[in-house]
Image (cartoon, rainbow, N blue to C red; front, side):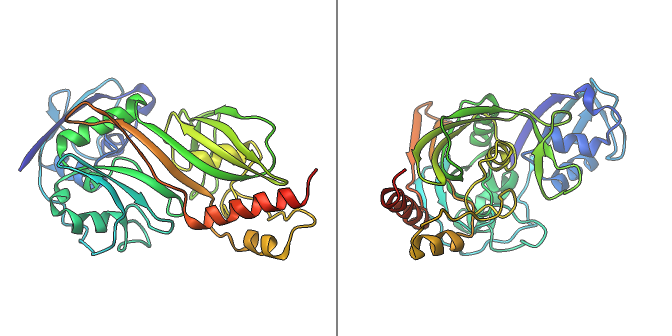
Length: 320
């Protein structure tokens, strides 16, 4: 049985919130049910005292967490094929396919990456979210790192928070960019559409996205994107805000535009591209045990390769 220790000071902007809500924000690596269980067991102290989930905070309190981590039995292992690029006793790096949900939730209780990880390595049941320290959207493919023990988990979370993990994406956006740019605009929950995120000047969390143009076509751009922060839907929201939504993005995209003079094959391929054209291509981090800088790369999926080839052919056949 492992012991986990963590601490944080309640920021004043959370004044008046319930303690369980505050804990979920301060310790996002742990599920709400696990945090509430630790509260009930007295393993969470607020200024040295045990509190209830419904107690309100005033801001400035010092929260200490010292808990025994036992296996989370809420989720069940499932035999699902994983494309693992690297694995040792401390972490594993995998290439997530399009269509695979990362974590169980409403409507996705089974068939997720978490279920697959529990089958591949049962000991991950003792870790927060089975060692998953960051996510990719269901319809986004690419590289993810998973911690295999508590020390690795702590190290990787710290690296993500300090922005020392390098994440580079490849994408296809609708529209022809003249040059790259940086978007530094806060992101939060959409005020009226709760399943979406949005740029929020007030109340949003810091979000920084760097965009570089790799290739330009007649009506699209191939992009290299680097993240400084990792907000939900960050790339999709920032690019849509700048009027360059991702090809195939049904949530933040716009009506499909097919350039005049497109071949039937190209037009059909654009119509049938049903997921956002976004792939986490490169990942670099410091190994939590050896301290070595490590990097991995995963090629874009075949459907993105195919659409890029058609974009090139279309541009060549229809020169400006």
